[in-house]
Amino acid sequence: MAIIGVDAINRGASLSVGTHIEAENPASEAFTVKLVKIYANGAMTGVKVATFEPLGGDNFTTRASAVIGDVPIGYSEHIVSIAAEIGDYIGIYIGSGSIDRESTGEGIWTIGTDEIPCTNEHLTWVASRIISISGESVLAPVVGIENKSANMGSKMVTAGLI
Image (tube, rainbow, N blue to C red; front, side):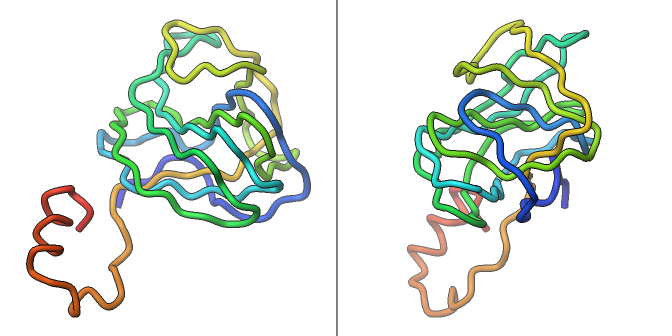
C-alpha cells in the first residue's frame, strides 16, 4: 500500500482557511490515491484535496484533485481517485473550518486562497508544522460485502473501489 502525507490524528492546534500542502512523506512511487483521511479540528466546508507537483523553490502545480465538500469534526475518510507521482505532496483547501495541526514535523506550504487547481503557484513555507491529512492507494475491505448483489460488486470493481 502506498501512502502520502501523515497520520490523520488529533493534534494540539488547528489551521484554517486556505490551501495547505503537507511536506512530510511525499509519494515514494507513482500510484492512485483512493482514500483520503482527515482529522478536522472544526467542521470544514468547501474542502478540496489534491496532489501537488513541486516545481522548485516554493512553487507547485496541481497534478490531480477531488472535491470533498463538507468534512465533520474529528476523523473522517473520503473515497477519491487522484494521481500521485514520485515526489508529489498531498494538500487541502479549506473554505471554512479547520484541520488539526501541531508545531512539529518538517513543515507545510500555505496560502490563504483557493489554489486547487493551480499552475506554478508560489506558496509560503512554514517550518515545524504538520497537518492531519494522508492519502492511500487501497481501500479497507468493506464489511458485509458478501451480502451485496453481484451487480453492486461489479460496479465497485469497475470504479476501482475494490
